[in-house]
Each structure stands twice: as structure tokens, then as C-alpha cells.
Image (cartoon, rainbow, N blue to C red; front, side, top):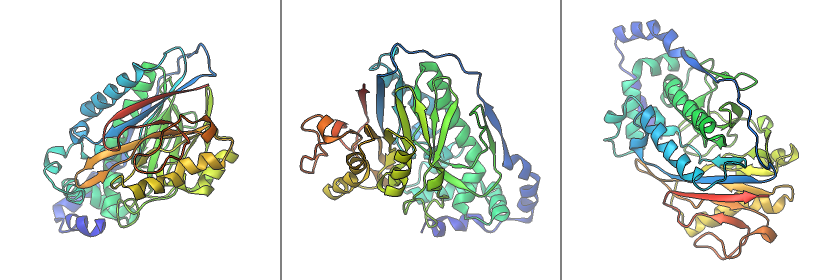
Length: 374
């Protein structure tokens, strides 16, 4: 469906454009790099207490019009969260899935924002970046949608990475930065450098975890894709379950299962077997928060925590609001074993289930939840 809506924008190129295509090939393939500063020592009064800040975001497209607009929007959310935590103890901020996707509007925002649909906005951006899209389509034999991510990934990626890196360092906290569609950019083994270089056709729904020194602590790619992400949609590349990893931070061993991955036993089982005791499930639910959807979400992180005693909790931040004509809704939650839960918490339209330590009050608003694990 998505391919059919945008493929017309990638045809009819002139001979002059073809020549320009190959002249610009090198610039389109190499987008520079981010080199992270040497780490600064970070000590805490008590590493047995972990503060978890679950950020429920709401789409506001002007926040993605430029790098400065994005930095301002994320900095405001970080300030709101920092006002509720103790700086003497480690803190982990957890943002929702696909929060970085609209960064691909940067440079084309004024032309795309007038469209009524997400597919229409993609058509506009493809057409305005036609030389790069055609180059990557020819080089890797990929769809226009994936070619667009390969073309503009260095712009979106640099804004996303450097914003979260700088804010993690400024506040001295860990940040699980939701996710964003990005090419498989080369990352130094120690997290000290990320090169915005396109070396292959892969584009993943990927999440980065930043440490309090601003470095990339880990990178996780979504293994199971939804209809929005598959070949007829955004045309992303699935990651591998075998590549899932666990990273240790003060007070926790973190495993990441991006949205649909949290429903899949093979993904969560691997993370637990690797030693995860906290499961992060950044999500963006593309639909209304109906009673049926709420029942369905009990089959993801909520079910995984109840079936695995080793998991102390799961953190499920939700993106909500409108992305053009696409509607996202969901209640963000911190999920624990039923014996450790706060009484009376449950999704708004389902019978009381227990198992929630914190829960957003609404599925369509911005909200920040702060919980403490000891």
C-alpha cells in the first residue's frame, strides 16, 4: 500500500538528474560521524536504588521541524522528569518507540506539513529528495520508502543521537531513547563513535541507550515488525533475536524488547536467559485504546513479567497522538509481579488485573511516571 502511494515520485527523472545522481553519490553515502567526549566519572550515593522515569509522549509535528525544535522538545521533557528525581541516585529515562521517525521531515517540513495523510507526506519528502532516493534505489535495489531512510538517515540520526547524548551527559542519567528508523550505521565497539555512513541496504527500527557520560551504552534493533513497518509499509529490516543483548547499569540488568518484540516469547526468553531483570518495551500502538486493545496489551510485558520470576519489572512507555492521519494511543505502565503491585491500578476499560506499579491516567495525553526500585 505504502509503496504504491509513493513510487510515482521516484520515476520520470531527467538525464541531468541522472548525472547529478552519481556526482552526489559520495556525499549521499557519507554523512560524517559523532565522536563522543571522553567519559567523566559518575558516582552515586546508593546504586541499590534505581529511579525509572517513564515518558509518555504525544506527537506534536512542529517539534520535528528542525534539530533545534527537537532538542527543545526533548529537553523540556527531561527537565520535567529531572524535577521529580533525586540527582544523588541513578536514574533511567525511558522514551517510547518511533519518537524519532518524524525527524525525516527536517528540511522538507513546510512542504510536507500541509498533507492530510502520512503517505502523502512521505510522497512529498521522496519527491524533494529524488536524486538521493533514486541513487539508493539503484545501488541497493530497494523500495522508495527504504531509499528515503538511506538518503536522509544521516540527518535524522545525527539530530536524534546528539540530542539524547548531550541531555544524558548534562543531567548525568541513563536514557533509553525510544526508537527511530535508521540505516545500520557503524558503531565503535566501546560506543565512542558513530559514523553516519551507509554501507548496506538495511534500515532498522533501532533504539539506543545512552549513559550518563553521553556515550552509547547499547544499540538494539527490533526483531518482529508490524504491518506499518513491513515491506508494504515503511519497508524496514527486521533484526535478529540472536542479536538481542542485555546491558548492566547501576541497580539493574536491562533487556530491550521494542513493542511487538515484547509479545514474543522467544525474544523475552532470550533476554531473561542472558540475565535481564528489567524489561524495557518502548511502544507506539497505531490505533485507538479500545477495550480489545487493552486486553491485547496484557499479552505483552504484563504477561512476560508474570511468567518470569527473574524480571523485577517491565517499563512500557507509549507514544500517542496523531502522526498526520495515523492515530496512536496507549497507557504507559510500569509492571511488576502481582504481589508487588500497587492496588487498584489497571487499564481503564478492563477488569482489575493487578500487576501495575505505575500507570498513566489517560491513553492520549503527555505524562511522566516516576517510580523507584530498591
